[in-house]
Amino acid sequence: MADANGPVEGLTGASRRGRILRYSAVLSRICDGALYVAGFGLVLMTMLVAYQVFSRFVLNSSPSWTETGAIMVMSWFIFLGAAVGVRENFHMGFDVLLYVLPQGSKGVLRLVSDLIALTFGLGMVWYGCKLVALTWQSTIPSLGLPGGFDYLPLATGGALICLFSLERMMLRWAGVSVDKDINLEEVPDMPVVQEA
Image (cartoon, rainbow, N blue to C red; front, side, top):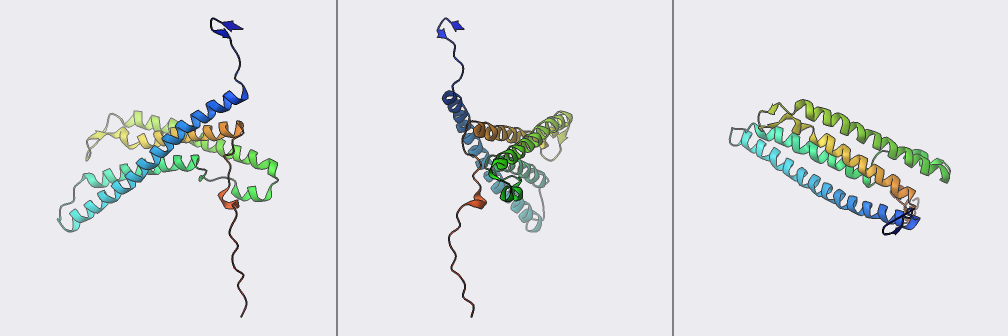
């Protein structure tokens, strides 16, 4: 089959791997951004709670928006941090089985783990979007924001979990090692304790 520019060729293994690696590089920048936003959110939440405590016990006048704002910021950094954990392979998996099963079955268990993370991510997106749509018309009284803002972190974190799970599966399919097990890295020799 040909077009005006010449023959149309299917993707070769090298070009497919190159596209997957470019996709992975974009997701790496998104992951770094999510991690920085989560870190900033943790600092911001700490400052909001400190301000609330100071206002309540020193000024004897606590603002109404600090608690709600701190909870909303906490939702963002929890769900963004969870998504980063999926990409960096810090999510829950079949680690116990990995130590006792033969080498060939480890890839299958890691694939199952990524599929489970993808399924949870899809559920977070689906139900998070439903909650956003259901509560968007209401207003958070202390912040003056639409009620759907409470559930945006759920949908956003779920979308990132889906992207990062798919990335891991695609990289594994392209032959890129993404299954480095930090628990199996070499441990430096410890000196033997002599009995007294």
